[in-house]
Amino acid sequence: MNDQHDHGALGDAEYAEFMELAAGEGFDAEEVEGAIEEAGHGPLPVLAVVGRPNVGKSTLVNRIIGRREAVVEDRPGVTRDRVTYEAEWAGRRFKVVDTGGWEQDVFGIDASVAAQAEFAIDAADAVVFVVDATVGATDTDEAVVKLLRRAGKPVVLAANKVDGPSAEADAAMLWSLGLGEPFPVSALHGRGTGDLLDEVLKALPEAPEQTFGTAVGGPRRIALIGRPNVGKSSLLNKVAGEERVVVNELAGTTRDPVDELIELGGKTWKFVDTAGIRKKVHLQEGADYYASLRTAAAVEKAEVAVVLIDTTDSISVQDQRIITMAVEAGRAIVIAYNKWDELDEERRYYLEREIETEMQQVSWAPRVNVSARTGRHMDRLVPAIETALAGWETRVPTGRLNAFLGELVAAHPHPIRGGKQPRILFGTQAGTKPPRFVLFASGFLEHGYRRFVERRLREEFGFEGTPIHISVRVREKRGRKK
Image (cartoon, rainbow, N blue to C red; front, side, top):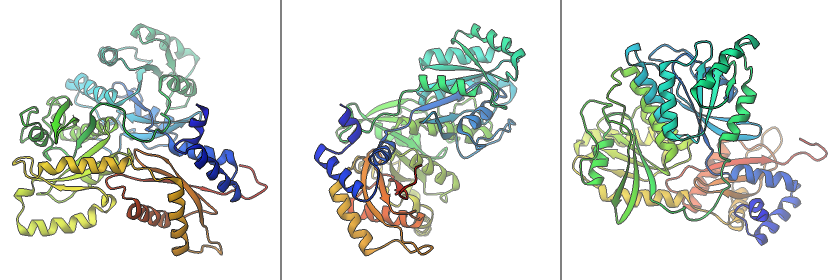
């Protein structure tokens, strides 16, 4: 059992050979095993931070991730690019979904809090529920507690704004919520956040060990993502062959996200519909924020992201943000260019130029030109999804990878920098879904050279439709410990 844990994807003979190679190049066995294990973990567990406005959610998220990235201005209409961040505590990595970005007008505040919390809880493995201890439990807090109970996810209760011992009695009052022990914290000053995070780690599952090969049973999970009104609901209805989703010309009219089991190309697939925002949300500033929160939740639950682009519009910054979200989440990706039937020759010409310049970051993703309205080329969607999944699960044997790396370094050495020429010494694939590689090198590899290596890996081994993660371990100088 332990062997399996240490070796990851390598069989005994391959592992012994690999470690001999590492030792010959001056790498410590423990260091090599640590690098493979770190790179080889499956998807990181997800923590959602929920609570009503102005209780300090974003301040707490900044505290957890250890930097000021989340927006802490609490006025309505503060939108931002990201809702998901990576964090680490006590040597364990996890993702944080921050729902502190936007608030609706006071009349609809309960509905707005509930909608935010629902999306985030849906994607999460555990939840931190933030309550302002100085105010005590409000009706909105009670409504969120009901949601949390229904969801059945582990919850850690953070009693925020406890800035000194005198306020601890306020925190104790929150036992009344029935969620167990309230953890008194001051997100602003950092007080008590260590104890809170220790409790969070108990609630979160471990990041799964990497397993190679076929997926565990059940339908493959597909998220349809794209900016509001790009045709996600129409596409879902077309592939389902019936009206399952409310379609409305007004952007952002879709009701709650629903996972649809759909028969397509002789297989059953699970489509996660992310097609919009609740009807109650009418303010446009909030709509963008909800869309990104909802997209993040769907992407976390999916294996493949089908990104819909409206070809009648120019490719926008928002389209690129959505693609980046899917790439950073490490999902297989298909790009579906919708409304293709509506293009004239001139628009088609300019669109192709846009695709060349704006879509460079996912030039490896399968592309289908479709029309959700007429059903044009819908039959091409499943082969594209299957291609992307195959790339996502591809594993290159270590021997074959090292033969390829040897040839690559001989033909295209790294540029000399400061009188030194760093070299890739050897490497291994530490994980799939998406493919993750660890390269062991004699010195720092520049970003441009890493990109070159990734491009050549794709040319040699395929990897169509999947991001690739490459981490580099540099050999330490002899006689020096970390």
